[in-house]
Image (cartoon, rainbow, N blue to C red; front, top):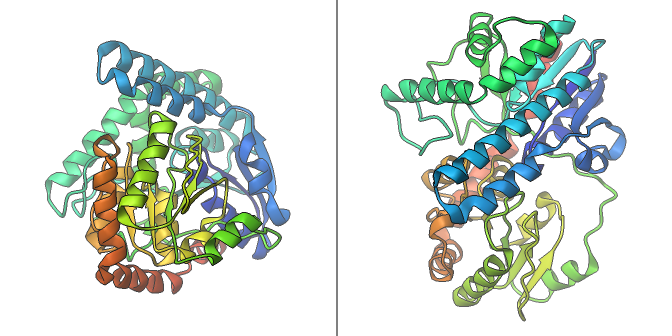
Length: 413
C-alpha cells in the first residue's frame, strides 16, 4: 500500500512515528512521513521517505507562551496567545492540505493533524486512520488528558465532552478556513467530530495499555496499540565527552525539558544544578529548545541524544512529562521526577506517580531547587521506585505497538 503518515508538533509528537513508519516499511508498504522541515533529516534516517512541511507554527507558539508566563492570565496576554494559536492553526491546516497525497491508499493522522488531514483525505477520496499519542475520546474511566487526572467517575464523560466542545469552539476559525479552501459549507469541529464517531473512524493509540488500559466504554474502532518507539539509527555515535562522563562515576540523573521553553533558561539551568548538588547526584542536562547551559564539576550539558541510549544509563530522569519523553523514561526502567509545564503534561505526570514510577510531580510553576532535590533524593534513594519502574519497563518490552497497527492495516486492505 501507499501510506502517508502526517504528524505535527514538537519532537515528542514526531519521533514515535519514525518507528511506526519503519515498521510499515519493513512490512512492504510504500511509506512517506510528513513532518516539519526541521525534523526532516532526523526523521528520514535509514531510508524512510520524508516530505517536509515548511510551516512550523509550534516553536513560535511555545515562544509566545513562554514570553507571556510573566504576564499571568491578564486579558492582554490571553488575547495575544489566542491570536498566536489561531495563526498557528491556520498555517498548519494549510501545510497539511498541501501535503496530503491524493494518490495514497491510506493516510495515517496524528491527533493534531487529524481535523485538517481527515478533511483533506475525504476530499481526495482517500481512506484515513487516526494514530494518536493521547486519548481524546470521552470515557468514564479517566478524566480528559487536558485536565487534572481523576479516577473513574461518571462525570468524566461530561468533562471529556466539555473539553472537546471547548477545543472545537477555539478552532472555529481554522475550520471555516478549511471549509473555504475545500469548498465545504458549514464545516466545524463539532461536525467533523460527529462524523468521526458516526462512521466509527478507526483510531489506534500509541501508548501502553499497562499505563493507560483501554476504557471499556469506548466504542469499537478505538484501540490501544502500545508505544511506537522512535527509530534507532545504527550509525549514531555518542559524543566522546558524554561517554567519558558516564564512565567516570556513578549513574547520573538526566534532566531535560525537551521542546518546552519554560521561562528564563539561565535561571532554570542554575536551579537544576543546585538541585543536583543538594541531592548529591551527578547530572546530564539536555539543552533542549530552552537552550539550557548547566555547568558544574559533576554536571555536563548535551544537545540531542537518543533517549533510548542515554536514559537506561541514568539513576533517574527529570523531564516535562510530554507523552514521548514519558514513554522513553518508562522504557528505560528508571524512576522519574516529572516537572509538567502545560497541556497534557500534568496528566502524564500524574500517571507516572500513580504507576509508582515517580515519587511526586513537581509542577514547573512550583519548581524550586529544594523541592526538586527532595524529589530526586526519594527517586534515587528509595528502591521501591526503581523496582516499579523496572517492572513496568519489562511489561512494555513485551508489547508490539507498531506491529498492532501494521496488522490492523493488513486486515483492512
